[in-house]
Image (cartoon, rainbow, N blue to C red; front, side, top):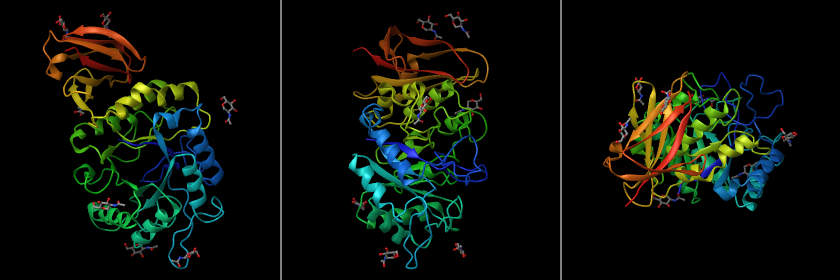
Length: 393
Ligand SMILES: *[C@@H]1O[C@H](CO)[C@@H](O)[C@H](O)[C@H]1NC(C)=O
Ligand SMILES: *[C@@H]1O[C@H](CO)[C@@H](O)[C@H](O)[C@H]1NC(C)=O
Ligand SMILES: *[C@@H]1O[C@H](CO)[C@@H](O)[C@H](O)[C@H]1NC(C)=O
Ligand SMILES: *[C@@H]1O[C@H](CO)[C@@H](O)[C@H](O)[C@H]1NC(C)=O
Ligand SMILES: *[C@@H]1O[C@H](CO)[C@@H](O)[C@H](O)[C@H]1NC(C)=O
Ligand SMILES: *[C@@H]1O[C@H](CO)[C@@H](O)[C@H](O)[C@H]1NC(C)=O
Ligand SMILES: *[C@@H]1O[C@H](CO)[C@@H](O)[C@H](O)[C@H]1NC(C)=O
């Protein structure tokens, strides 16, 4: 089953062509960062995040969130023998072993960022090019469970070659490590991802914005027609969830989460989980929405109808029996104007007389038993309705 992640990320800088947004640290070093994203990347902060994820009141761990991931924020210089070290201003021992051991003690797992080039994207921390075997062994020795390999300053070789090298380096350590290929979707990583990594980014960094090339709306569209490449062991990765990070609104944040769930995408939370608001909790911790993401069929959802009025219908087959149950997003992709959006049973290959139970997954309540089609009424712009439809036998 697909692991869920909470991520401590580093802020993607406005200047960085690369990856990761996240939680950052307001230490004055981040003045070129934007959108109120901060790195949370001190030993103490990481342990606080792990505590928050593991706490009963947050409920995250119970729902399946299990990884604490650091992005490009932790690296110190290489030591004389070439071993990668951690920035001692953040990790006094120069290693991630202590914090990883703490995270493990809570029953959680630890993820770490590396870069395929010879420098990372931010602040020129050491990249792994030329050191793949050594760095893989170092992070394995620290107990790391997840590695994201970024693509800044990459060597002039095809991405499948470079990512295949790190796959092999990680394999040689003998430690099971989830491998995330962050090549920004440049070379159709879905076509080579499954044999190379456990997840592959389909696009440039996702930023906490609705419009723009790197905004949520465009990332959603960039996931269309990619479902066939995903499955157990390998997933399309639309990047971090920007839940309620300004200027993303609640409605936009809900639409984001519903789509990530339908995509069977890694759920990597970029917001501060230490002090969640009710709204954040209602989005990130809705068990019926998470169940769509984690469904036992492990089939990614995809677009089924792209209507000329800017509305779309996306579907995901659900367990337990083939062609009997679907998750459906009725999506109004327009920036203005409410829409009524219909899913006709015909696109599920059901007859008009088929009776089906329709359930509102956000509200967690049954809507009714319905024939022929279901119409979501007055769906606001950038909003959606997320339902499950189960045919009655
Ligand atoms: C490399 O140097 C580091 C830091 O000085 C040390 O902890 C490590 O044991 C050394 N590794 C090897 C293989 O010599
Ligand atoms: C980075 O790698 C290139 C080759 O890919 C090499 O020519 C260059 O010297 C390296 N730079 C550093 C800072 O190691
Ligand atoms: C290494 O690869 C082999 C062959 O794919 C696989 O059976 C094994 O489980 C892998 N081991 C690790 C630690 O990834
Ligand atoms: C948590 O949020 C509340 C309400 O926004 C605020 O009053 C409190 O200071 C926050 N606590 C922490 C530790 O951030
Ligand atoms: C949906 O249709 C619009 C044109 O109406 C097009 O611009 C867009 O790319 C289509 N989206 C998908 C995912 O096919
Ligand atoms: C949606 O349908 C309802 C009637 O079922 C109607 O009152 C409403 O005006 C429609 N909304 C839109 C945006 O067309
Ligand atoms: C939905 O089904 C009803 C009953 O068959 C039919 O009258 C109606 O035209 C359908 N609506 C749409 C939008 O397909």
